[in-house]
Length: 313
Length: 279
Image (tube, rainbow over all chains, first blue to last red; front, side):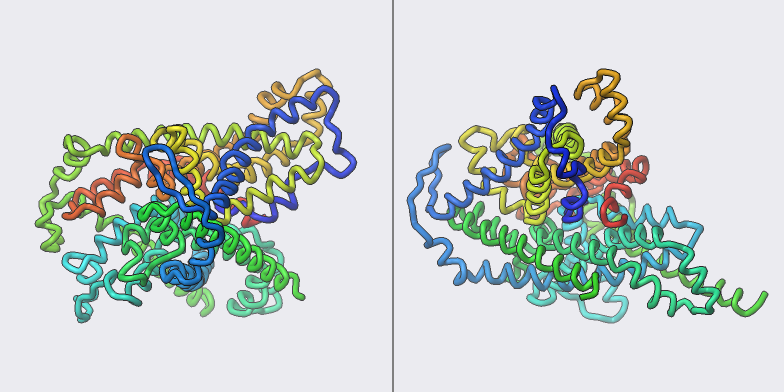
C-alpha cells in the first residue's frame, strides 16, 4: 500500500548480474514495456520537480494562461525560516504525526491482539474496522465537523451527559490540535490494526506450543515471544503510518482550515495556502522543494534507525 | 471444568466486550451522520434522537438544480475507472519488463527507488507543479489532467505490488512459452495476466479507492464542471451558511462505493493493504 517501500527495491529486480542482456529479438519489447512507466515518472514527477526548482528562484504572476516570471535568486528560500506559517506547519505536522501515530500503534496492536485471540466473529470485526480506511478523508472531516459542532454536535451532548460544560472543540488552540488528532486516531487505527493482525496471524505456531509446554503464561508469551517476533511488522507499520501522517491535508482542510490562528496548520496546508490561495507560485515552490526533501530525508533516517535497532546493533 | 477453563471463558467474554466497544466507536459516527442525513435542519439543531425521517436532503443533493452532485459522482467514477485502468496497464508492463526482461540492475533499482521517494512526499508538493504544467496546455480543468495525476500518484503502489506478483510467476512457464514461439505480447497476455489476476484485482481496487478519495490534487486541478465528489463535499463546508443535513446526505452517498467494495472485494483490499508489511 501507501509506501510501497524500501524492501521492494531489494527484492524486485530478479535478474542477476550475469543476465543483463535482453533475449534475442526482445530488445524492442523490453524498451516498449518499460516506456510507459518511464514516461509517467519522467514527465509527471521528475519534470514537475525540475519545474518547481526553476519556479522557486522566481516570482510568478499569472495573466490568463501565460505567466510572467522574474528572477529573484534565493530570496524565496531565504524567506522560509522567517515564515511563521511554515514554521507552525512543520512543528504541528511533527506533533501531529508523533502523537497520532503513537496512539494508533498502541491501540491498533491492542485490537489486533484481541482479534487474533477470538475465533467467532473475527471477519465481522475486521470488516467493521476496515471501513474508516476506505472513506475519503474529506468525508471523515465532514462527519467529525458536524459531531464537534458547538451547537448541535453529539460530542457536546455526550460530554454534557457526563457533566462537562460544552466546548468549542475546533475553536481553541491546543484543544483544536487534540481534536484533530482524535479524528486521525479514529481514521487510521484500523490501518495499524489490519497490518498488525496480518503479522500476528503469520507468526509460527510451534513456538507458542513449546512455550505452553514450558508453562509460560499469557503475559510472558506476549513479552518474550509475540513482541520480538512482531518487531519487523511493527516497524513497517510505523513507517507506513508516518509517511501518511506527514501527508495529512484533507481532514484539516475541512475541520479547522489550519486554525484557530495557526494551531492546526500542517505543512501540506501551508504549501496549499501560499501556492494556491495567495497565488505565490515561486514562494510556494520553494516551500514544496524544502518539504519534499525534508520529508524524504526524515523518513529515510527513521527507517534506517529502526532497521538498525531491529538487527540489534 | 477446572478453574483455568472458567477463567479463559471470562477472558473470552472480556475480549468480545472490548472488541464490540471498539466496533461501536468505529460505527457510531456513521450512524450519527446517517441519522443526520434523514433529519430536517431544525431537527438536527435541536439534537432530536427520535425524529421523523425525511428524504429532502437526498432530494436536494441529487435533484436540485443548484446541486452538481450527480455530475460530481460521474466525474469521480470516470476519473477513478480511467486512472485505475491506466495505472494497471502501465504498472504491469513495467513490472514484467523490470523483473523478467534482463535489464541491468541499476535500471530496476533507480525506477523503484524513485517510486519509493516519490511516494513519501505529500501530493500537494507536486500539485502546484502539475497545475503550472497543465494550465498552459489547457489540462487544468479536464478529466485527462486529473486522470494523469491520479495515475502518477498510484503508480508506485501498483508497480511495487505487480512486481511482487510477477516475480511469483515460475520462470519455467515463461521458458516453455518462449520455446513454443510466443513473443512478449503473447506471453504477457496469455501467461502473465491470468497468473497475476489476483494482484491486478488488489492493486485495482486500491487504486480506485485512492482515486475516489483523493482531495488535494483534485481540488487544485478541477473547476466546477470537472470537480470530483471530495471537492464537492469540501465546498459544502465553505459555504457561509452550511447546509449541514445536505452535507450529511452527500457524505453518506460518497461512501457507497467503499461499502460495496468492502463487501464484495474485501479479500483483495486486505491483500493489497497488507502486502509488503507482512512477509
